[in-house]
Image 1 (spheres, rainbow, N blue to C red):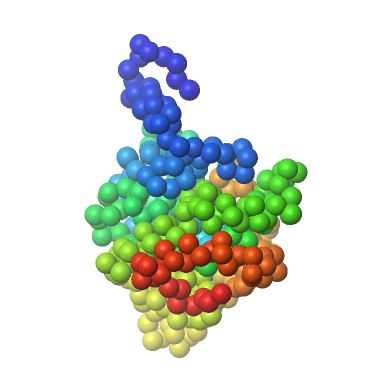
Image 2: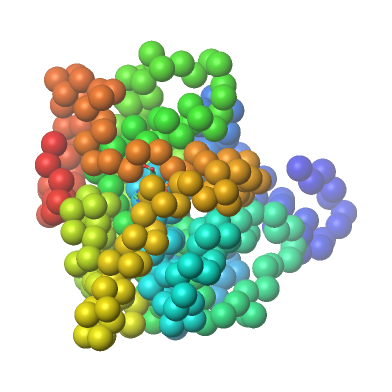
Length: 331
Ligand code: A3P
C-alpha cells in the first residue's frame, strides 16, 4: 500500500484511488483468506487487475473473448476455441499444440493473468496473432467499453448451478489444501453460493448479464451451455465455428473434422497429458485441478435434493422472471 503523499506519478495516483475505493466497498474473505470486494454488483477477487483491464484494454474487431463463471467449462471451451480457429494452421493433430501447451497459455486470461501484475505498465497485446483469443470471468456489465462497442465476439458458456457449485467445491478442496475446510462443511458453502457469496458471483446475475446481451445481440454474444456441449457436441461445435466466422465446410464435415476436434479436446485425452498433469497456471492454481469428472448431474452424489430445493428457490425465480431457462438442464 502506498503511504507517500508528495509524489504524483500515475502509479501512485492510481494506487491512492484504489485504496480509497477499497475502503468504501463492502468486502469479505473468500475461503476464509482471499479478500473479495462487492464491485459493480459482483464479488471481485482481483480488484486492481479488474480496474486495470477495464481502463486500459482496447478490443479489436477480430478478437474472440471467452466469458464464464469459474468451473463452468472454461478449460474445455479454451481447447475448443483454439482448435476450431487454428484448424488450418495445425492440420496434423498428432503434433497439435494442445499436446504440449496448457489451454491457459493458448487463450489468455485478462484479470487473472494479463493484468494481474501490472503496476503502471500494460501488457503489450499488439503482437498476438489475429484473431486474438482471450478469456475472462468478469460479468458482462463490467466489461471494458471497447469490448462492448467494437465488433469483437464473446463466447459465453454457462453451467447449471449445482454442478458449478460441486465443481467449485472440489476445486477448492484440491487447491486450498486448507484443513479448516472439511467435506462436512459443504452445506454451509452451498448456502453461501446460493446467496451469491463467492468469487465472481452472484450466479444468477452473472448468467443474466450475458443472457440479456445475447438476446439483444446474438451476433455479439454466443450463449452455450456446458450440458448442451455434453449432449450434442457436434452441433454445438458447429455453432461455435459459425459464430466465430469460420464455419465448417461440407468437405470438412465429410472428413469428420468436427468429431476429430471434439476427440482432441476430450477430457479423457487431455487430463492425461503431462502438460496438464503438472505445473501451475496463474502462479497459484495447479493444472491438474482443472480436470475432474466432467459429468452432468454429479451434484446428486453430494447434495440432498430435498435440502437444496428451498435454497435454490430465489435463484431460480430470478432467472425465470427474466425469461431465462436452461435449454439442456432440468433438476
Ligand atoms: P467437474 O469438476 O464437474 O469435473 P473450468 O474449466 O471452468 O474451471 O471448469 C472445470 C470443469 O470442467 C470441471 O468439471 C472439469 O472436469 C471440466 N472439464 C475440464 N476439461 C474438460 C473437457 N475437456 N471436457 C469436458 N469437461 C471438462
